[in-house]
Image (cartoon, rainbow, N blue to C red; front, side):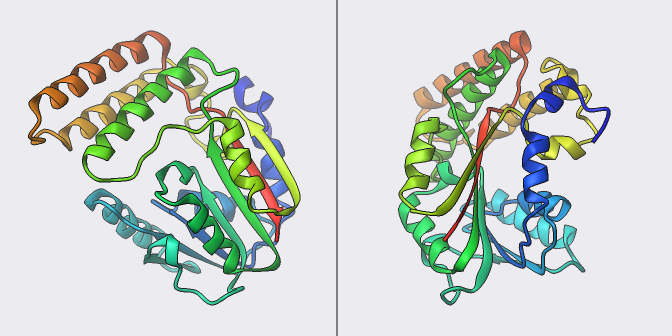
Length: 268
């Protein structure tokens, strides 16, 4: 692709997209699919595919709304969505040619159980694709601001009974992947997502202090806090509100940018 912003062009987003472009996905399972964002990414980048199944536990009203929205967005396409617990997938062994999970490990209560189930429903020599952000390494101040927001949001979700852990370290992610004993393991480290290649705002987002990103971040903080407006412990509620306001100030000063991430491809 041409005319890419400097940050996107110097990242591994293009390298990852090129690698995905060599993968025949065939029957694909996307675990913790959310809005179906990674399905959309794979549709744009894979060499070819047959069909997609997106599953999500849908622990909140918001997540159920996201799934319903995804069903409408992908209507008429070879995509099906199911509300399902990934710890006990309702599929036969070897049902899929590709399984994937994107930016969702930190939302899992039992990571080992979910990944074992994903491996079970993947055919022999199938593709296992995992994508997850990490918190350490050489992150910019804007990335650190977004990490603060993420960890604050994780505490909000925890009060609501939703599993949401802090962003993992790079080594923690690799330890999880290595436990799967996949073959032909490939690890790609990038500051920018493949989605940035196709995003209409990619030039605008080159500046982490741009107004659109700032307002999106502030809205996310305000929306998250509204979820606990009626939480009975006033002290905890006020503490989180004050911390949210401090994070807004940090974002105003440093901007916000997504954390660096690993995209990992292996075979069973």
